[in-house]
Length: 365
Image (tube, rainbow, N blue to C red):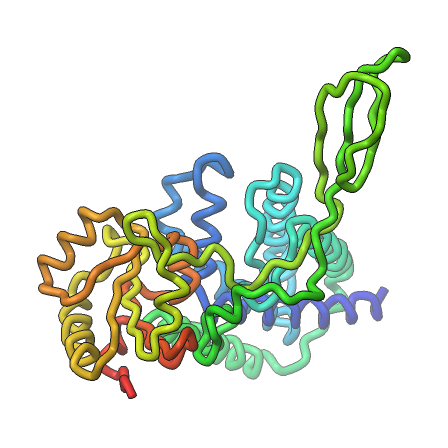
């Protein structure tokens, strides 16, 4: 039992620290995932949605801290109880998502590691077993350092988490795991390789025959059956390759200009996924930098999921010298964790990407 507890302690502690840090690096992204869970049709807790970011920050910091507490052996009973309650909650959410197909990505490891709902649930079940071992054998979790050192380590961990989360909120994630990171080419990210795995779909064809109803299963070919066709049901046996960048459009008046704009040699994108929530004061800096970009020969566009009336009002209010295009809100939230945020592209390759607090730092080479 002692060695089993020792293994579980190290494994669970490190995993919680890694998982928590990945989400700590991008608390805004995790808050978007929490908003999905709170939304109507999922958990039906819309009153939590305005507080998603605060909940996100508290959860990820606590996740990192309990991982550290477990490793160093600080307040063991509190730690194992906290781990048990957290993993029960996580397991419920991942099972609910998988069984009812509500949220397709739990966000357990942010954008660094994508898990399917059932993979997330399986991961949580394994963690639940390991944490139950820790719960039963908590007497074998001996401290690794003196009480004074353990207290200092916890204070340092808390301060690190606090300073780190403030930094990424005021700027952008330090480590960008998304397909829209600096140096990435958006058009390349939309391509599907020739040798990419194809989706495998199973078709269950139902016929009415002289002997009664008959079901014939194929991988797509229409079966030759002597009877009256009733209907068919499809089941995805294996998912096909999905490119890192998908559902990316830049629309205006119902026409998609994405490929044309991504071929621009010098392009500035001002991204504001929702103008109702955007930081209005930031558009003073946006106006200055976009005017500078236009003088340098850049093409400047705005991208938002808000309607034409809202974008027109913003342009008029701040005297902006560019037009807005429509892009899906989820896509815009993925591109940059800032509302607004600014990107500089050369033929579809992202050269610069900044939070609205750092707009003045754009080089516009």
